[in-house]
Length: 334
Image (tube, rainbow, N blue to C red; front, side, top):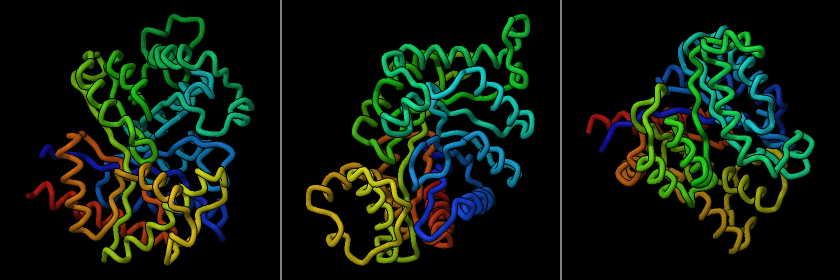
């Protein structure tokens, strides 16, 4: 089994009874905690019009987290590029890289990160997305290049800076693009696992080396809920299950505390849908997590696992990342 890095995906989850200020402080606390545990990077994801997620101004929040940490890489997982001007993103991430040299990642995706009406309010044109997204990545690369210094339009800050770009995907579409451009690829297995295996196959088989990357680099994002006992892990995982029920029901309310019996909340059809979406979710004590990580890596052979952990109690969330770190360390020694 190939060794792999571990990282954090944080959606800045808003919990019932907590303020958005509390949410941001929890995100910073988690970043500090996982930095001390030697997690590789801490990414924040762009979402809009959701009471449960506060990471809409992703670049601003990245600055807040980077300023409160010392060494962990901080970035976007991701910026939904067609929601923005390429120049604005180049300037924002050029500013971040200038403030925190060698620590900023720019993960980009093409999805809206929201509902259709809000996507319209963001100025997206659905008819142009498949053409616009690849073009915008090339624009970003040009703005970051030293060669753009003679251009009429320049990204300052940004020009000449090494801001690594990662392509995000939740289907096979972006796998082809990441392979063609020779860029690292991150897959959203935490909510869209159906095409993950095929996406990795496409990316590996069609990867073209580039000046940015000489061989494929794959990040798989998964959900992880760990606790000192299996019973506790399954109890606190009901916050995650409720979050997915809310998605199915188009209910954007803040994250709920755990419950004793999910069967009182979901219907059999909803349960089936949620468990299908969460098929690559690691729930359990350290021994169970370790075994599930081993099985996953033997199957997918990724370079990095990015852990998303929807746990209502902040201290238990911190503990979950500790246990996952311990599980990975044990695997690497085996």
